[in-house]
View (cartoon, rainbow, N blue to C red):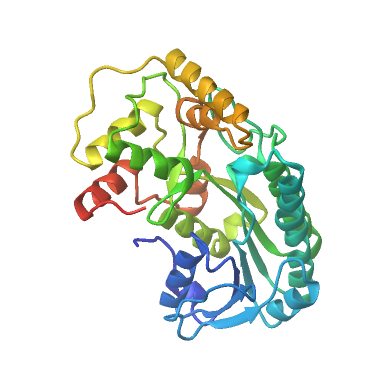
Length: 339
């Protein structure tokens, strides 16, 4: 994990991390331990704590429990808030929308309150590009301020706004980070399914539609979090975080095929045919009583736009992504496929 961050900044600093057992959180734990941080990790009582977390202070608690958050923040200098509810694909149901708000918005509000009362000086919040609305067929920077159009995005945006407000009111160093779709070992959802489809050969050749989608490796998200928590220029800011290399759906297909030593066919299935087929699949699933018919949605995530410009965090904080999807896929191709 090659990260550009000043080790001495974090040495012996008391840091509270939420979401430490998650996809990105485990990488943050590894980095912070390497930097001799006095690390405290907030975990739910039913969370599995890795056996090799020697020297890490474990505090049981929950974002819904203000008292546990007060205990977790006591004596802490820096909070890195990576915990959240991220089941975006199920967000169209009222129950999931309510949970997004309860965890991602209200949970962050409680943590901020506890941090401010405890005298925490720095607060880095791991948000999402979903905190802004769909930018359409363009690449956008942080000045793109369209309101989010999903319950997940609205909860994240509300949390971001509270983070910045508390920073202004209390004089804290606060920063919001909006990663694009994150890849890396252990990833799930659509990108993992694309790689599996390329490996197994059932994914049809995707066409070149000229779309662009931003991605970012988990290690580079960790780099961004480290820089944002440490760098004075990050205070009061919000940053997109990507690997700097937007991809078309065809790019994703070709890269995935090459990862497993498979040639990419010169032909492609037209987008109109793929969308028609996906619509038929969703209709059939709904007739069969399935509520989770998302073939069209999954296809849109491959052929649609979701492009974000992360040049600001590079210019202001020195963020330099070390991974691209092509490099990552070459790596998994050499080492054998792992989700």
